[in-house]
Every structure is written in C-alpha cells, then in structure tokens.
Length: 548
Image (cartoon, rainbow, N blue to C red; front, side, top):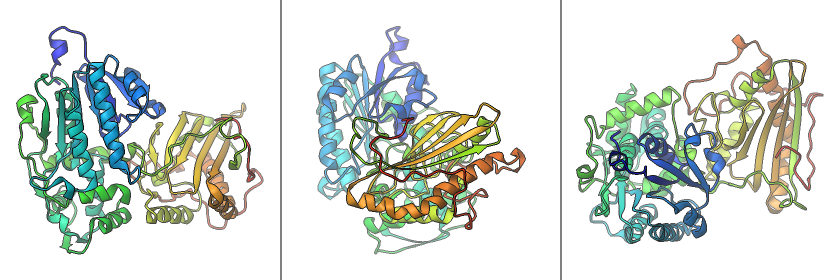
C-alpha cells in the first residue's frame, strides 16, 4: 500500500472513524486502514462483537449508534476521515426514514467536528431510471449519498454493483445457486447487465479515498473490468469451479419477491437479504465513468476480472480463511438483546433447561468439541429435529441453519453460527449463543466447561428463553416434551464425542460454510430419555442463574 499523504509529509497520522466495523466491508476495511498507517476508531452498537477480531487491540472502539447524535459527536472528536458503511435495511417498513435521519446526523456532526473527509459506499444506480422507480434499497442508498454530499464536508460517494468476495451476500447467492442447481428455472433479471467488482478492489479504493484532496467532492462509479449478465456470471462461475455446464431456463414470471423466497430456500442467504439484491438487478447497473482512477490509480493487475475474483474467493472459502461474511452483521429482524441481568428482569419470566455431565477427559479436549459445534459437526442431538426447525425458520423468513460457520475450528464473539450468534466466548470455559431464529421471545444457549480438579471436566449446558406474550409461554411449554431429546441428547453426545480417542473423532471440516448435518455424534433416535447425569429446570425464574 502506498504511503499516505500525512505520513509522507511527516505530519501526524490521520484518524479514521469506521462505522459498520462488525459488518462485511467494515470488518475488512479496518485492517487495510491500519496497514496503510492510519489510526482507526470504530463506532459500534455492540463493542464485544469486535473483541476477538485479530486487529481489535490496534483500534479504539466507541459504543454508539449512527442515529444517536450524542454518541456520533463523541466518536467524531479528533477524526480526520469518517467512513459511513451502515444502512437500516430490514429494520422495518420505515427503514428509508431511518437511513435518512442517520445520514443527516452523521453529516451534521462530522461538519461540526471539523472532519475533513466523508466516504460512503452505496449502490450503483441505473442510468436514465427515475429514482421513484428504483427498488427501496437502491433508492435509499442514493438518498443517503445525496445527504452526505450536502453535509458541507468534502465527500466521496462510491457506487458499486455486485461485490465478488468470499462471504459476500452477492457471491454466496451466486455460488449456491450455481453449485446446487445444475438445471435452473430463472427469472428475467438473469439477463440484466451488471458490472461486478472484486472485494479487494472495493477495499483498495476505500482506503485510497482517505487521501483525496479536499476539492474532490462527488460520487464515483466503481466496478470491475467486465460487464456481464447474471447468466454469464453463473456460467463462468461453474467453469472456474470445475462444475459441469449449467442448464439455465429463463422465465418471465418470477417477481423479485418470489425470487427472494426461492433464493432463500436454495441458498444460505435469507429472503430478507435476497430480496433487495434481486430487486437491484431489475435494471442495468453499469459504471458510467471510471473517474476514480484519476485519484486512486489502479496498480498492475487491477481492477481484478471476474474469473480471478471467483478464484480468490473460492480459495478463501476452501482454506477456511474467510475474514468476514454477509452474516457478520446482524441479520434484519433478528433479536439483538444481550443476556439480561437484574434488575431489568426482576419480576419477569426466564425459562431454563439445564443439563450437567461429567467427562473423563481434560477440559481442553472437551472444549475443542464445544467450540467446534454447528456447521458440519451439527448439534450433537436428533439431527432431524434441528433440520426441521431450520426449514421452518426459513419458511417464515428467518436465517435457518445454512449459514454454517465462518471458521470450522475457531469461534469469536459476533460470529454467526447456523441460526445462532456468538454473544460471548471465554475460550476454554464458556460459549454463549443468542438465537437469531424467528421466535416469540428471546433465547440463549450456554455451554460451560470446568476442571473437576482430578484430571477430568464438568460440562454444564443451559438453554434460556424469555417469552414474549402468551404465545411465547405456549411455545416454551409446547416444546418442553422434546427437551430431553434435543438438549439432553446434546449434552450426552458432546461428552461422548470428547471421550472418544482423538483418532476416532471426526476431523474439523475445511469449508467455512457447512450446513446443518448432524454428524456421526448425533443422538440415535432411540435415546430419548435423559440419563441420571442430566438435570432439567423448566420453571419460570425471577432472575437468571449465575454466570451472566
């Protein structure tokens, strides 16, 4: 990376504020900025999501939200360059209003703080199409760009179409559609012309814009070197991935809404995210200029062509080195509340199912099994029940089980894990997952590993549920008869898997995007009754048990 203007002139290193640092682009931009010599401050609603990032110790983290003027003001203090990488898509019908207000707050507070440069990554809009005819997603992105350009702060608005990179929503949608369906009936938008761009080029341009001169105040289209139809992209993906030629039959009847439901069933990308992606493909999205290269020159080999971008992305996926995924950011509509403690819960109901087992192995051996849960290894109990729950979640617009894992061996706070998210991890001791499935309440699953002081380990597992209204209570009591199979079997099989000789254990898979398979450690269907080592608690509690 070229030396920044501040460093070359011997001046103090510039400070960059990054919003959306727990998301797909933001999580990759931060280390690029650090490597370029910038100081980095991250504004996030949940700082613990960044705690386990490899770069966490090199940045300043500020708790806040772009809709909260006070927290934005505090985050902007001493900032030279501010990146706006957030949007409210999926937060409800008023997401456009939320985006509008957040952008106004951000621009105004940046101007008051004396920030010298705003940088925004938006969507590439079609030429000649009135804004009212755009999808709500693209329309809101365009409006946010205008608001930031009108903030009084020199602003660079970057507009990109489909981003090709390991873990991006666009790439995952393309990948799974092509790999899973050798014969596809596809909607008309597969013939829409698109100018995809490699995520490496997006990051390169984002970093380069931090050194733009103050007189540069405009929007730029950014894209790769090729204009392709989605049909071209699927066929070329198949060729690069070594798949047989795909037979693709376009039909005129699949609306964006129907397409998103179909994509939600076939790919890990839920309909709530697939719909804005497909709506954006109704119109041609091709760069109208390449002016950005006057200010951020492309080095040799850049911009990266489509085939090379796919090769690089697949290599990351197959080597389990996906730094961030589309699911790194919170899923629209998913609960984000942390596990509560008193006094907030005083007088409330918190149902629990607690299981305890002893393992004749060292704690670190048991922990390896716990941290490897989900994805290819499954959930160590009644795989059919987990699969059905995942499918039901997909049918109501949830994420289902197919998000898999970012890394087959290691978890970090904020990772998505099938239809859970890692809320807390104390390596070797505690894994706490928060449910992101559609539920009439909030749910957590905790797994504790403790040393028994005699060379073995104690395993303690808690499933916690806070019901929302009468439906929530009915849901818990309706599911209670199955807890012995699901939760009891899980505790039993986790311990059994740890106690097997190491050579007999299933090795951790290499891909980072596995599905919900139960694995060889799954509970046999006949093991319904809990063993004597299990204990269950199914009564409402006024306060959660210890360990929160």
